[in-house]
Image 1 (cartoon, rainbow, N blue to C red):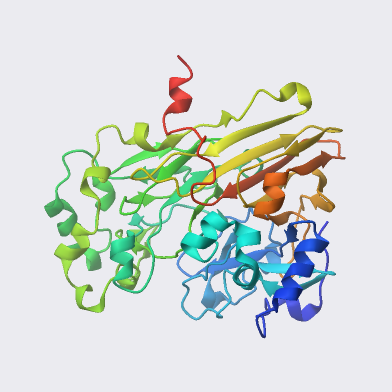
Image 2 (image 1 turned 180 degrees about the vertical axis):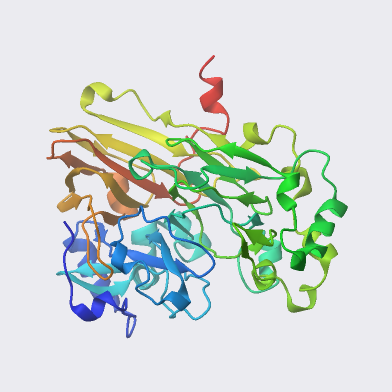
Length: 428
């Protein structure tokens, strides 16, 4: 069950008044033996319709006000700010919990103790925790859109956004209105075809989905989505490990009868390019979008890490693969059976959330809530430091059903991870 905080906490997630000193961060790390308990981080989207399956209490879906939109995302181990108009400066940031209270942000903690928390390899290169993950939950589909590359995003002072999807079975008992995702563009689609779609923006449906293909989404599977590739995510709850950025451009003008503002197409485009249709068309990765074997290059199925079922647990890769030769993030799904205990060693730090069952991780309780009020604290989210992950973390299931946790990792943390397509090749 979740823990209640003061009534004020239910209406506003408090911002940190000042950065913590290094001693306070070290105390928190040592108190948890390398583990940091995190508070739920809720994010609204004004242009989407919440799917109501990520355990936020129904009466709190519009806790931030209807003008901000419904809450349809929960972010995990995030040091990334949500790029929402009218948002407070800490929206999207995860908070560390100590003694039943939010204290400082994970971003502040990493700034103070980066090598210890995220590991020297990541800290030396990025000076931050450069990834995050979220639950993304909508009633219907969202617009066909892309996320800019590093080069494109740098023009507006941002970073690019590669991302990945996994559809947790525990959160997808119902598929809602449209459990299909359009990916890419059909082979043979031309730049002029897409340009004409942009020219029709104010005529209602600009018909861009006529040039794409929808794939039915299956719980327990996933996809790898590089920058500059169009996609119109369907209505399954999605676990999304991704790069620590919130850039995007919507290329579809009408979704389920709701107009999409032009501003959502060009929000991460240089101002002098806001009406440059040729520039907007050229933002797309044309080879990637029209590839004949699109699914073979992006579709993921779980792959066991090792043959450990007889030991009472199963660990599986659910997000893996490289983009342009780089491993940017990976994710695993760990299932501990009732009464079992396992010591799990990993190569790097990770953000963790429980999606089923109860037990413990190290000295911290781990419980999957049934319902969460806005502002309440839970016991289902933890950041595991680099040191703790490499030493090995003890998981124990003291409940009556499987304990299932998802954990995602930063760049180059798992060089032994599979490649895209390995699950299909393994069937032969």
